Length: 199
Image (cartoon, rainbow, N blue to C red; front, top):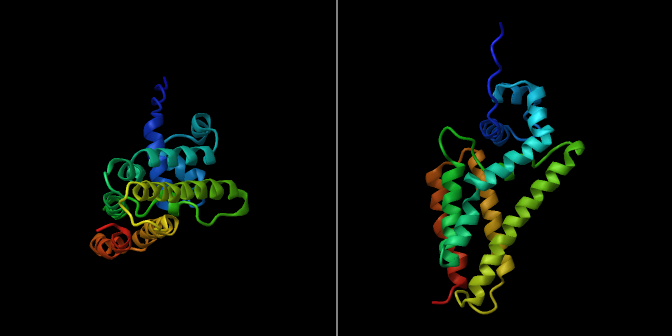
């Protein structure tokens, strides 16, 4: 008599899929890789998630709500823009360089280049990255209104600079640049905000 099939743990499967996509990117993970990583048949993956793309989108949402949500938390919780930006960059370095985990940012590295059939994935992740840039600019606008920054500070240019740096950290970490070296750039990175600050 055959045993009962293992109970399906959707959250655990989603975590395993997140890690696979984070490590190898959207197109770098085939359905056979997902079957191996999740330990369930492809039919059960399709039944639970609908498609590889939908599974990927859910995996990115899981990343953004958990580990990848460090920037949102820093921008919302810190009392000053300087504290928020510095915390965001520091936590990015710590996340992107963890031992035994995929390096870099899942949203930055998972689908920068894909075949035309996956254009929707590229567009969707681009929206994620643009939203991050906007959140940084919005936080700097609040700082300008609060008097933290000098009148006339170009918060769009400053926000773009920090978004570029944040996304660049992901590339550097993927390329093997270590935590100590990346943390060392925080001091020069914060210089632009200090120049824009009052006093």
